[in-house]
Length: 429
Ligand SMILES: Cc1ncc(COP(=O)(O)O)c(C=O)c1O
Image (tube, rainbow, N blue to C red):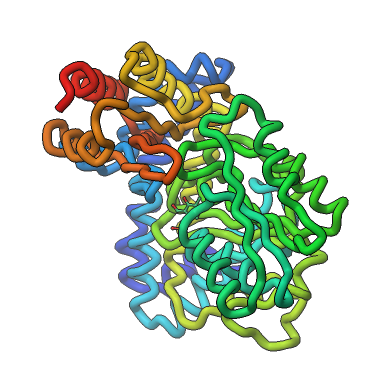
């Protein structure tokens, strides 16, 4: 282990110059705000604008735009972005030494911390570049014979559906996509739709922990337990779930889980992880082949060739920032922001909210439609007139504007969005 002194000697001037950045103002502000809010319940802190102002100040944003598409990918807090830049600077001195020998081994710290937060063993967690890569390792790595069936939904993520469709063409497997109501009146509907589609040929169930289209949370444990009882593997798409609302692996009971870290964890862009239940590791083929000796090692899924260590190492700073707020407090704030616009817009007869607002069903993500105006026009107007970024969701069965705030979003930004929507609904643009 290097002492701080020998580390600075090793890394030379770039390391010494970067030392000033180690005095971490952003993190200190989060911690100071946390001290002030200590003892208050998460739902009380959710509306404490003094507390959230400190969090908002930890980001370097362009406040001339209102970014309500944090579901795509998020800006990192200053502390994370500085770590990323610092690690890149250090790497660039002599990458074969500074990146491979000094920085890369520290991926194990990141693995350990992510596993602790997710509630699995570190030996079950591989660090990936995004949720797509994590999920595709599972989707393409499971042995399936012609005629074997995968059951999923028609509201799963496009790329993940494309991945299964490719296996249909290449391996002649069968893909069944079930529909479900939006919003569903109960969790039972979701479990019943998926479990009801199982046939003797079904080998895999693939579904979202929380969908990107409307933010619908699924009864993951119920579905996974039943699938396991029937000998069926479960691939859960958690791209939007980790660090968004509280849960652990034990609450899920799935075989494979893939998530992004550049969404709700606010880690650098190009980060994600894959969880593989320990007994599934040896039989799962990596996407990029690894030596046979690594067959039972979770690290076989990280054999991607030369890549920056900076991105995955700066996840550690994102974890510290996230833990400084705390998942209970964060999810309470995200629901508070979502409810602020949703409860206001729900008053209009021309507005339909496609997200079930029950806290068990959803958190920050909400999808809303002005029934009298095409969604593409609503999204264009939000940008042209108010500089609000939101995502159009156009599904075969419904459409609307997806709204995803994050911890840095201000009340004024939420209210501007709600006012803009009310205006458009009233006058029809
Ligand atoms: C439900 C869902 N799955 C998978 C992904 C892919 O995530 P990434 O872009 O991190 O690969 C996304 C991205 O938005 C998503 O919403």
